[in-house]
Length: 358
Image (cartoon, rainbow, N blue to C red):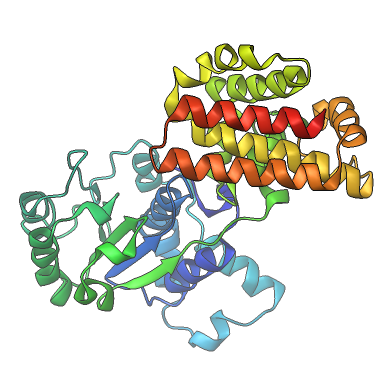
């Protein structure tokens, strides 16, 4: 568990949560909405740790008598004071407990993989929330994958949201707010996570995780603003293996006899769950070829390590041929998602690529 300083991006959400701490306007319930691996849990844990931090609470108690407008002025002294009060100290007993996931007033609601049942909500929240905090100002409940609550579970939670005790804070983490009843949403503050800038994600991969630049570029392109997904991809041996497979296939395809294409696809067909990523990698590679052909721009290639191959393909391909390849990849992707014969679809795609880069 870490503080807000360790979170990449999501500045507006962090500022909202920090202001809630600083101004003592913490809501009894929040929905943190964003795709998987986007940082929802990190944000919830940083917020929970900050709320329970003994140093933060002591400073807030000490400033309780001061006019609120003074606390929010922009002078350097007050700003520094404000920054300290909205980051966990990481040293007090509560912060140490939170870091070890054993802070008694930060409760993680557990459930099975398929659903959050009414029993989960009743036992872990409704029956527990009436007991006052053990050692902290708040009693905080973190509900991951909250979209898995069934209707009965949501109705059970609604009763608590309607009349929560003053010390209660419930954090619902979800990838799909549409799964919630309107009455749940209306009683929560909803914070939507936005995509993080590519340059920030790239810097994290290279500086924190020591990922090579060419590998970072591909992971960032796939992540689409999702820091957690970029980190997973950069460290995934399976993703790296598939990336190399795509490069080698494209490198050989010009000299590949048509009767060998089925054999070339055997590895991919054995791992059908990788086919959508295979299409994405092909798209990125041929967009690189199109970019270089149009602008001779080597600096912005995603497949930096394959610049020599990309230059060669750009030199012997036409714009119309590259457009046909990109269209063929999209068509193959749609056919696979519609459960059209996979071996035939992929073989036709390779033949299309071969015809247009020869």
